[in-house]
Image (cartoon, rainbow, N blue to C red):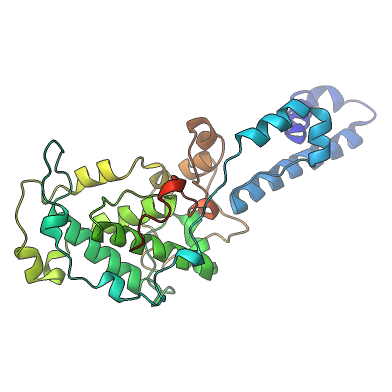
Length: 302
């Protein structure tokens, strides 16, 4: 922050010091500060966290602020290897069914019936199939992801496995009669992808879908998305004309160490000052698997 302020002050007064005998020294300081600010911004985009000052310096400079920060911190529970179902001893029978969708999602008195049995069956089918097959050919077929997240998917096996599990957790909540409310940013992106494909799932499901009771909102996918997903912040990471990289044609795909988002882009805004102003949570891909609600981190388990 101090380097940013110094660089801004030197730039604003550049006309004054450019004519001074120390202009070369001032120019070096200005460029050093500018470079440091750029490196700090790059670090934030790559890791999702800001560079921090040394703790002893912070404490000495402002002890009350340090104490306030310590009391306001909350533990960040993340999904990871310890919660994976794919490849566990329960896989694949834990998602095979059969499941009584008609009973699990029957209308209940006093509640809006926004998730019908047919809708639940479709979402579950797509979540399981896409989650199961997602990593079969990542070179040519990737899930729909914004550009800044595609580099994580292609270069990090751990990130891929974590994203795959987002699909399976959504499916497993449905099996328990729970709505597919995402509990992390990765699950929000996964649910958007699932619902986009669920409209074409009837043929793949077959006779099971026809045997379920019909309701007027069986095909209201927009309503399900609006109610199930708290916000659409993750969709703001998509650049204009970005197809999500689903067809492996990212010739200009950015490297993790140098994500080219473009000046003035919505993604750059949301990962920077815009996200801070809007109080977005866990929007950087490195934070996609941190749970929103800590008490619900195991609600998918059988």
